[in-house]
Amino acid sequence: MKLIIAVLQDEDSSRLLSKLMKHGFGVTKLATTGGFLRAGNTTLLLGVDEERMQEAIDIIESVCKSRKQLTSATTTIGGVNHGEYSTYPVEVTVGGATLFVLTVDQFLKV
Image (cartoon, rainbow, N blue to C red; front, side, top):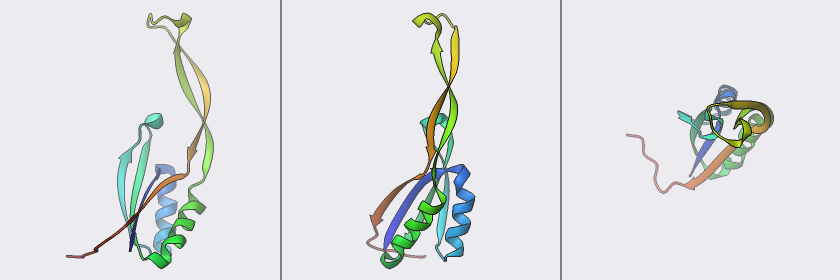
């Protein structure tokens, strides 16, 4: 058995949860926060039999696509910090998922 830990954007979590459950995967959802863009994340825990591991990964890849997003970056005016800031748009890549796949030695339901 494998444990897949998937960290993804909140924006993708509902669609992914629905699709995983539709295909018979048990999922535990944790609300988490990432440092990048201070945006909310979702962390999913999936206990998966080894023969279904690639199916679960394929489902995650089909829902969690990388995309471009504009955000504001802040800089000081004149290079000196006098409380005056200027903001400008910056394009960043968001989305996708970070997956950790671990081997599970024992699985119990008590």
